[in-house]
Image (cartoon, rainbow, N blue to C red; front, side, top):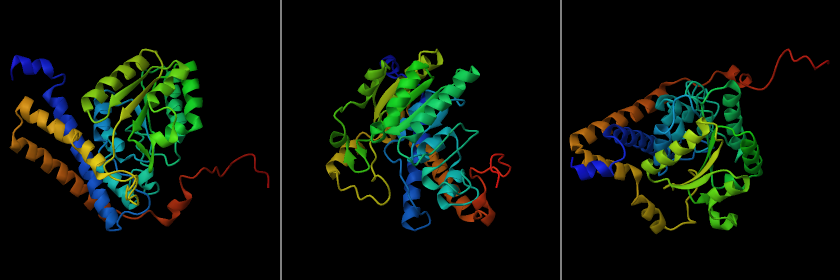
Length: 336
């Protein structure tokens, strides 16, 4: 590698390898999920993360394992990135007892307590307040852990966002609010739903630091999230990051995405983070075709094994219907 090349590369070969393999795993997992949905092996709602993988990759390298992640219903990618196994995620999509939510949550409600992944939330914007709550818990316990709270551009229209921003700034909570702006709230563009096109500017009303980030670049995501996480760890309070990304597929499996042109989708695919990362590994770090093929095979095997695991896993027992519900058998205030 020449001296000039070294100066232009900000991250190590190991970091790029990690990003490439993680993003490829997320892509192949979601592609397989879409295929299995078409075969009716996965049912109900299913929101794929295809196109948005750089966001998960950059966030992972900018945080620690103890930092909490919480997101909305397009949760497969962040769950796997955080360490929830592909096997338990695929089993959850199948509704099996071995799923990460015991087969009770499905696509929108992945969960991993030991991985510090707190969902997977189907109610639009509900996780914004919960994410601040996770940050408050860390502040109360005296740790320097941070909560990364993800939401979409559509959820930025919810009232809970403003209430949470205000409280988070008053208490200087260690939370990074991340708007995954993929341009469309279901099928409705940002332009049709907001007078403010730059979502990061919503932070201005609360004197909260805000920034806009290229979500097709794991490097840009890493750097922006790293700055915000450092501020939070040091007691500087929250940050709003508007990370501009794009989903190649429809809002969910039932969405034909007729509200956008094929040219628009292709324009974003030309900036695909997996391809750009692979090209950097080849051109800058001299990664060979054999090394790339080895990664591809590892990812392929992991996805195949997740499907086999899901298919062979048992269904939840009937009595599971009455478990994990909010009821206390010895509740003291019921007198009759």
